[in-house]
Length: 155
Image (cartoon, rainbow, N blue to C red):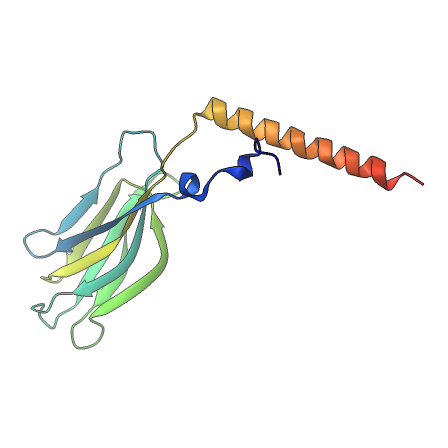
C-alpha cells in the first residue's frame, strides 16, 4: 500500500468522538430535546439505556421519541413502556438517531433516565474534497484491475 492511499490514515483520524449523554424525564420535565448542531458535522445519538428512578411509582411510564422519519414527518413513536414491578429498565442496541430528536414522557410521573452516546466525527471533508478523493481512489482501483486483466492474458 502506498502512503497516498486513503486507507493509510491513522486510526485516530478515523475514530469519531463519543461523549456520554443522558437526560431525566419526569412530571416536571416531560421532554428532552437534542438540537441539530450547525457545525457541518454528522452528529449521531446512540440511545443505550432507559431506566426508572428509585423513587418512581409503580405505574406505567411510556417514553416516545420524536424524530424526522424518511418521509420528513415528525411523529412520536413509543420506544419503551416501563413499570417498576415488571420492567424497570431496558437496554437498547442499535437505536441510532440523527438530531434534532425529542424524547417525551407520554405517561407516568417518572423519573425516567435515558443514557447513551453522542457521536461526532473528528473531521469532515468538504463535498468537493470527498468526491475528488473518491474519484482518485476509484481510478486507482480501475487501473489495478486493467493491469490484472493484462497479466491474466499473458502466456
